[in-house]
Amino acid sequence: MSMPEDDFYHSIPHFSEFNGLTEDHHYRPVPLDWWVVLTDVRDSTRAIEAGQYKEVNRMGAASIVCASLAMDGADCAYVFGGDGATLLVPPGNIEAVLKELSVLKSLATERFGLDLRVGSVGVEEACDSGARIEAARFQLADGKCVAFFRGGGLNVAENRFKGNEEKYGVDSLPLGQPDLDNLSCRWNAVPASLGVALAVLVRAQGADHPATYQQVLKGMESIVEHGLDAANPVKRNVMSYKSWWTCVRDEARQYPSVFNRAFFRKLVGIAVAVISLKWGINPGFYDPKTYAESIPTHSDYRKFDDTLRMIIDCTPAQVEQLEVFFENLYQRGEICYGLHAARESLVTCFVDGTEPGEHIHFVDGGVGGYAMAAKQLKARLGQTVTG
Image 1: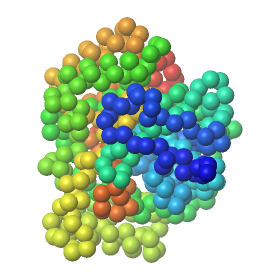
Image 2: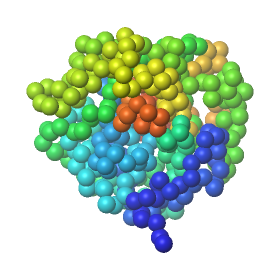
Image 3: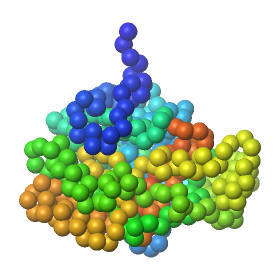
């Protein structure tokens, strides 16, 4: 019996060793009738420099939440990029996803003053010049995976979208209420315990990409104390919860109006969260201590989509060593890279529930993280910086 196309992503066997990102047997070709959906905050660099890095980050995470819920809450294939996201959507869901993202686009403009670009490119078209899109599933924790991609097709899709927004872009719908009930930004910025939260973007050049990425990972492992598994910047002992009023003020902006049932439900959820996670009072229907301690293992501080993306906790001396290591590889023509150092990382939460596998936490570096590192990367690649 053939597999339903919408089950493609969930049928891929997962793996849990990050270095396995270069192994062929983890990847499966994406069906040609699927769609690449892209979101991106236009002029994100300028918005970040104006102090809107948290809002930019929120729109990237909100894109994933809206798309997932438009697919009936499916654990869809996506990559969070800081100022946007890239998602793979089966043909049966593409209309609903684009409609929900069009509403989010309007909200971004009206409530946050940001221009959220939304577009879609067919997988078949993205692969029509020899590129491929292959997907793998990397397990963060039991029941929670994130997608890895290779083959160059996502870069083709992004270039076509940004090069011809009139053809591939999606217009805003009149301002409505996107479904953001499960999106929250209630943790304070997480201070880097070793001094620096470093955003790292590395893209292999040359013929043997797997060997290059293995060389990069091996070199980083030798520099970062205790290895990359221990470099997760999300550490429970340095995390703190925001106040009730701060949470309410921040999340009210996700709603066109606060006079509705959806926002009332949000107020109740915020109250429970603050009582349990800030004040340490167990409400009885879930274990806040267990949930909070599971957040680091449910955080996507490292990922891969033809570009190695990481936010790592390291010392200033290790940053210097990493810069020398990457620059040597760059001068030899083996990689292009971008880095951005901050004192903290940001955590944006997508919470369906508090049990293992029911939540994920998108991680970015403070003051622009991935978006600012991407500016460096694009300069080294010789691309025009439009984000």
